[in-house]
Amino acid sequence: MIQSRANKYMETSIQTMTPAQLLIMLYDGAIRFTKKGIDAVKRKNYEEANNSFIRVQEIINELVVSLDRSYEVSDELIRLYDYFLHKMIEANVKKDIDAANEVLGHLLELKETWIQASKLAQNPGAVLNHG
Image (cartoon, rainbow, N blue to C red; front, side):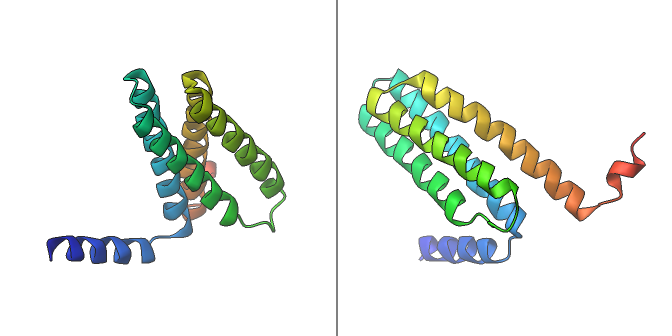
């Protein structure tokens, strides 16, 4: 019963999010599972690492599918996401923390970029008001 209410709450929350909030949520998930996978490799828990790295790949695939291809930057993002997928597969197969850390760094940067872009979209005059 409680789980059912929690699921309903989550479903409602997701349905009422803006596209930018959903995108940032996907990045948060990818970042969380990348960190979890890295930690699992360090602890030699390869099953957990595998599951976490697969979740990252699924989220990256969702980022690709949800990409609005009407913008020029979309082609660059697709190439970047493909690279992330390649590196996450490498991280998973070889249990390579360096490959996972590389993707993690990019995900953190991109998340911050999307947060800033979202703020600008909400308040376009903000750039002009600074300094």
